Length: 200
Image 1: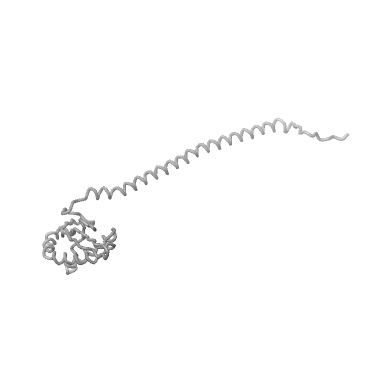
Image 2: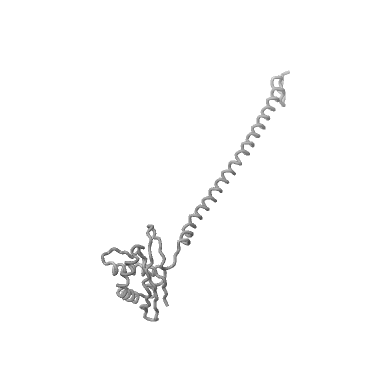
């Protein structure tokens, strides 16, 4: 009678206990590997959190520094403010002085409505030039005021409205006052300031 192979596996002496032992060892190795993987994952998780904390800290520091940088000029300008007639320090570190010019009231060039402008002008000069500028202004004030009245009477309401209009007018007055007071082109008037600027 021929021998037939059994349908279910039979443990041979070489396969039986040794194979079971090897399978248990594989399971143990697999469990150990999983534990190591979990431990590595736990170790790497705080590192990610640490990176996020560092990034958040850097962001907060950057915001504080930018806020402080924006606030410094405001504090400096607030502490360095002076009234009219006081000495000022310009950007170049030079000390400047304010020389009052006076007031001018002029009707604006408007067809439909009667409008007028009232300006009070101050000249900003170098501190060393204050006395000379005051004496020269006294001599030439009539000519300068005549020019200012003529110049303002040619302006419309639109010309003197808004910051752009005021700054344009200030530059025009500065240029012409320098030409009238210092024909040699030395331009000793540093700036023109409007103490009052009223349009009605």
